[in-house]
Amino acid sequence: MKTRRVVPSLFAIALSFVLGSAAFAQSLDPRNPAPLQPGTNSGNLDSSVGEAHYYYYWGGPGEVTVTITHVSGGAEAALEIYDEGKSQGIARATVTPQNSSRHLSANLKKESKWIVVVKFPDTGGVRLLRATAGYELAATGAVRFDKAPTGPGLIVGTYISQVMYDNNENSAVKFKPDGTLEFASGVVGTWKLFDENSMIYTVTFQNNRLSLKLVPGTGLVNPGNGSVVFKATK
Image (cartoon, rainbow, N blue to C red; front, side, top):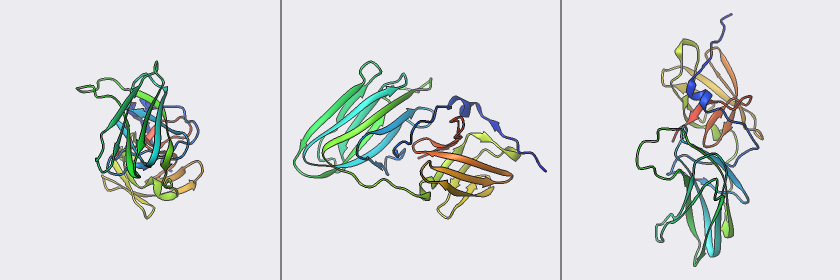
């Protein structure tokens, strides 16, 4: 029987983190922001994965307050909020480990869709060191939220492999809606939801059978040590 050879990349090791409670979905795609949810929405910016998370909510008529709290990491987190129709200006705030919370409030005359961006402040150049910032985000007042997406299809998308498998397979991989996956090299396989509550999936290709946890905004990670196996892309 052939022995599976898995060699974690340095990038995957550097991205190891402690898995906490289930996080609300985030989006790395500015064209498809994730619906913000009632209460606290938790996220973790990591420059090794992406520079920004995108959300939306429905606000107005009436007073709306959006609060961002810095909870971990050494980097600042910048918050931007703007009307999707761009009929109103952009509101901005920045939080640091020393200044943990900021509130942005407005009295809106009518309901509209508002885009929320949590990102690293612009550096004006290439970021040389890895930056992380854990945050909590909440919208209160005259707000309405769309239902968060659920089900097996959350995994659908394109990822970059961070681990080298048999035959030096570590290319990009696309997880398709029909339960199949295909690497850029042509290798094919399957995926299946194992436990919806914990977002654990079974991923099979070549001689590999993996049990991975989906972390929105990050990718598919090893549930044992938190290392990223497939990094999410836009």
